[in-house]
Amino acid sequence: MNDAASGGKQRFADLDDLAPLERILDRYEGERGALIPLLQDTQEAYGYLDEKIMRALAKGAGYQLSQVYGVATFYTQFRLEPIGEHLIRVCHGTACHVAGAELISEEISNFLGVRDGQTTPDMKFTLESVMCVGACSLSPIMIIDEDTHGKLKPSNVRKVLKKYRGESGEKAE
Image 1 (spheres, rainbow, N blue to C red):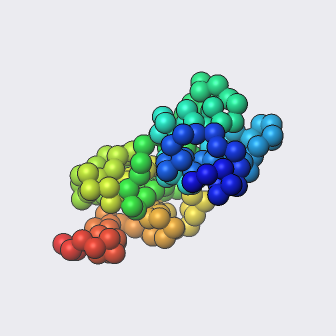
Image 2: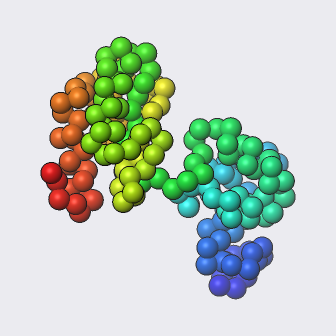
């Protein structure tokens, strides 16, 4: 891809990987204090923020790598590793905690063989605990991708997860 095709000046030699970042940098060019939106858009484009991408973002936007890394590691919205095809978020806010969120997380862990913050080896599922999703009346609750599953019991967690295994082409158990 040349400069004209990319719509701007070429900042990086390897545009196969960095073309989306090039477009993001062009969008925020000259904007002071745009590091968080830059990181958000970059993560949206790549799924996570690896070292290569953060180095390129820092160079292209005129930040020190330490600034970029500092912001990316401070805010929990940013990921430094890829996540699975399905992101499972289990609420552990007060209402969900009291209603048994720990048991829900345990059941998911046992079924998928991962702990909080981990991704299954086949990259199908990532399990993540969150503090509150603002749906206390549905506690305990888990959100898979954008689908909310509330009033859960450990006994029905596997049934919900099996649906997502089937959607991803795997045979449901």
